[in-house]
Length: 370
Image (cartoon, rainbow, N blue to C red; front, side, top):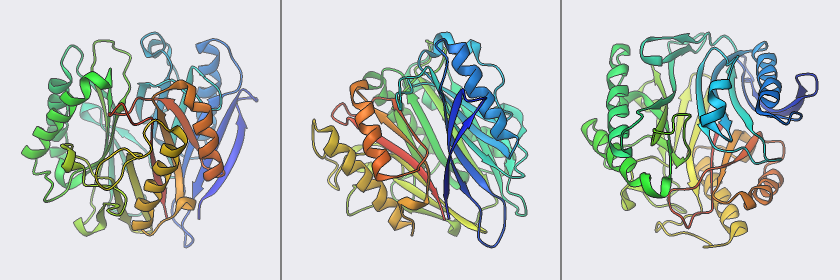
């Protein structure tokens, strides 16, 4: 069962909304936290508060993955100090809820994970008491290349990095995130590059793709069109992974030319993880539901997410965290209120992240555990 807690950390300068899960029969606990500053006008002041809160949480469990959301990555990335010893993603997506901030963090922690930095920037984490190994990587980019070239080269290089672990994109990669600068312009190139590499790696509509988010965002290097984060697991039998469709509410992504799974359920020895891809207000014909209506789109988005969770035998009460993306900063406060009412206690953040189709005003990704 998930427990939600709100904490005041860093001597009252930062707040953390935390979910905690520990199997009823024992086993390692895992935590997801959304951290934001409560005080500080400058970036350095806000980062000092947030990084201190991260440090305090890391004293209770091992950081496995962190995503740092920045309002001005070109200027703020060089100022980041004291990052946790794990895979870190640093993305330009302004944090907007509960107030516009310069920085916030999503932090995933687990007992006895002991991350190790390996060749190629991969962080290897263990699942204590099992033969499973996690491979995380954050903030990959190829400055100066088109979105097509960057995506193709990053995915191909990542596939090669997996080989020494006896792993591949097809068998072991379970989650990707693509952050696309000027998404209305560069998304098509990212999709083309991903489609071509996936086809070469035997990731097809007749088999399966990978749970993913493709969203507006950028890294600190202004010459980078695409940034990539990845997550893979070795040691899982194929039957432990189920690809979720939500067919009553969503259409197969291949119908409109993109290659990702709506969600993926992963059966670990003592729990089930569900990774829900970026999900918008869409119907099972691939059409936008409630065009121009932020309330209607938010409600349909949540309904779609809940259908995917139900397919995995989970409910909203099993959600560990959510990241909500809005196209218009003016919608952030309202969307945050809607999400907070629908999912009381859930750690979530609302950030500026235009969705891949201009008519989609809001999108959400989440994870769940049961």
